[in-house]
Length: 207
Image (cartoon, one colour):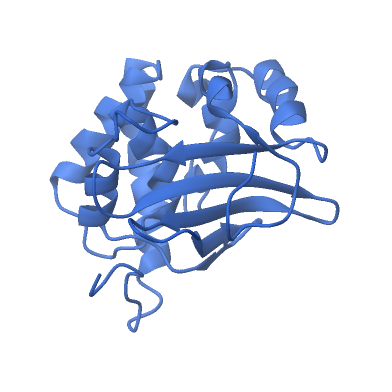
């Protein structure tokens, strides 16, 4: 697979991995961690177990294959998520695609800590809910939303954010009795992270 503007790594389509047990723990569990939390996050919050998580991590983080997840939109900017499995520099890269532009724009990365810009709640909502039916990639809006959730860098999310997140978790088979606490931990971490930089602006502002 080739992505113009991202010229490193043996890229492969990763969308088929989304249905594998263990994916959401690999993708989101670290965001549930917070030094002030009384409970330790566990894969069971996502309806998964440690064995599934470990087995899938060997696939997701294989240096010979870098999974790519495409979140294209009907109009306006879309996104691409890449598991960057470089030896000594493993992490996740988040790219934006722009209509009329041939190249992607990298806006953020995750390698134990988040770096770069992110999206407002409104932008995350728009990209998740505007799939391009003509493009390859992910169409399901709940999966699109959860895949891009680590990009949320907005200190002022609406009250409806928790309900939206709980519903998305339920759609990927997170247990009903843990979905609310998982959503609380995820939003707590993301909004706390957002509040440290008063000068933060979205990369889509003015677009």
